Length: 213
Image (cartoon, rainbow, N blue to C red):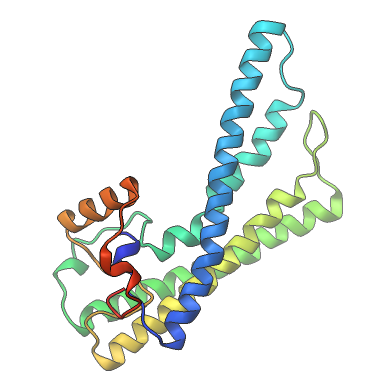
């Protein structure tokens, strides 16, 4: 799936979807910049150790803080585009309302699991704040990284709620191409859209603002 498989229109649902996607895109960009920063820091640490026998102080502590953030900042963005690993063997053979009923159920289960994760990660973050947990070497506070998890899971819960709304609307109205959710694409369409994304090219229709995106 890709951003091309998420349709848009002028409905409230689609407007909320696009507004949330802007936030998710910014967080995903932040995650990408963090990955770049980690790569540069790793290179600097290696060169400093090899050339000057002076590794970066607290390098492991910085990695401990950065790696979890790299994993979680793009979680909502990936869900919006349908990029998380999933099996379409069964659902790809369904048609009409059966597809949206299946998607509705699976999204509801994800929302329930996400709610449990919000509760659990907030408990860990609150305890880290209360106890003043820090890393071993240079005593970096741990709570900012731990707090990022319930925040990101809360944004994911908002995304899943919007998708539940979209699937419910499609199920009730019998829509073939609902907005605000990633539609299943065949292998050829996925490859074409991924190539367009990587090359920076966009479909001419992408700027039309119509229901077909």
